[in-house]
Length: 114
Length: 195
View 1 (cartoon, rainbow over the protein chains, first blue to last red):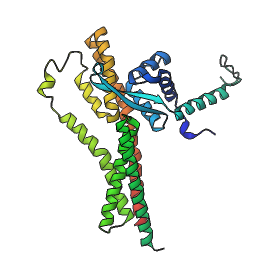
View 2: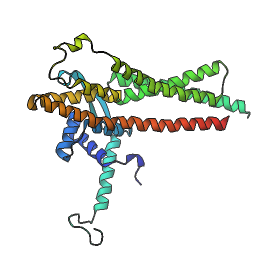
View 3: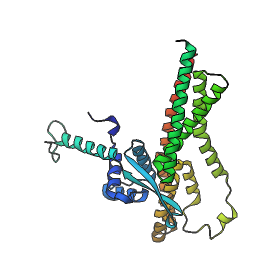
């Protein structure tokens, strides 16, 4: 049985995958733009940070402060990186999805169901 | 075992836990601050505050001979609220009450490419941990938009981003306050049952 602390919401999964994709350049702006570009979902910066804070509380990501730069009005970036727990949660979500989808033809609705 | 000896045992156990908690949290806070790690720094600071306050209250109660667990925990819960809420309220109050200085109003300090000031002030209501990175992130996206699309469109984008960002961040604080309110109520119930 899966660990209850490892459950991921849909948006949490998207954000976690984005942090993983961006590697060492995962901070607010890059994450928001990547989510918009890849997932095609307009997102506010607040929603991104609220999700990242939740993931940080679960121990799935960690963050650290970057350098203050002029182009950001003298404010520092907050970088994020995925942790082992986050990686495990992504694998678990992937495993469950694959197990449930195995043998199903997702291109056609099943008779009597839809 | 008498009631008094049980109370002494529990009180001393709590004292040891608070002491260990304070030392550990302060260490984590120091490491976090040294390595600029937000997770460690914020959690360590929070833990050091809570454990330190608990330790202080218990030491005072032991020194004056008032070793009542119920009283001690009621004070601890009260101090927890004060420590958590009061500094942020004071900070936000001071920011809002602060009048712009002459330096802020000079053309050199307030460039035309700067984001709308009032929208930026609204961001002072969100948690401190997120405030600086979010203001920086919005600034980073605002300036190129201003140069490409003009002031009006950039300002509309900034305002829409602030308004849309406000609720997800503030709702997290509200959820936590409600959760701690439930714990406060349980503390009162426990005190009522013990006394």
